[in-house]
Image (cartoon, rainbow, N blue to C red; front, side):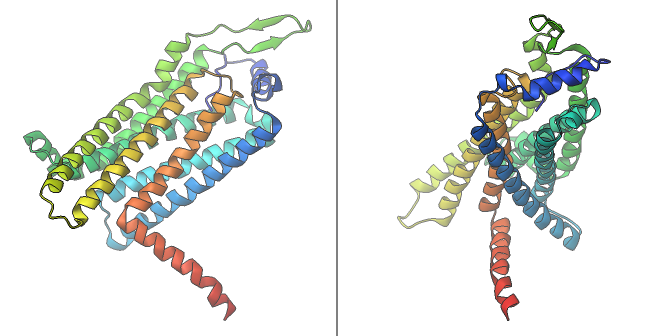
Length: 338
């Protein structure tokens, strides 16, 4: 998605960008695999948009009806809206780049997509991290005074933290693009009249560039991992305690704790996979049309969809609303036939 960076004020950069994006010599995928990949990506985008749209609609309706929304609901609204925007943007980009490459290669269009992609990805990472942190503070069982004080104040802090995350994500995305446009183009060949003669722009250190691009990933990633691991440890300890005092019959509370441990573990695995894929993708470790780069795209598209589906499955209110929606959809055909 980030592609390569280009030096300003040259018409050749648009031609070079088009060559890089569609050069079949650099593609490791056959036409069949390319078509299959596009179909998979579009299916993931649509699934994610539907799942996140459902979460947004439920909590937005609650917000309008009750003039307020729970703290977790507020985080879910921010998270779902950012994911809808991200997956809509990715679907729009892949459509435009496939159908109108010359328009996509225009500077204004190209960099608008890059800034939006980085911004929305960082927002999504931050909001998911705050959701994990909020669940940790509210559910984990620790008796430290600082933790208890944080639990008491977390609901009031979350709205400020969400908007702060938006500001940080925007500033970092602009910073990344400024570095990209100001410094580098990674080995785009300029074909002269002599086909054997090529000129290359100067390269910036891949390590330095990767550091700037991925600086916005590290902090929410660490926060998510720490919050999830501490929550799992707390739930595991409490589950073992309840198991030692069990009378032999199934305890609903114990089953709920085990379910929470599994859900948090799934969230942690998905989050790490997505962050690693985004890190690799932004670092330009592989060619744009390579198999590994395509795999990173598939993982990044799958994460918002799969995580949102798990959120619906594990949230009692969302699960109940989803079942009600399915029941109504099943009734509509019968009503139309009357």
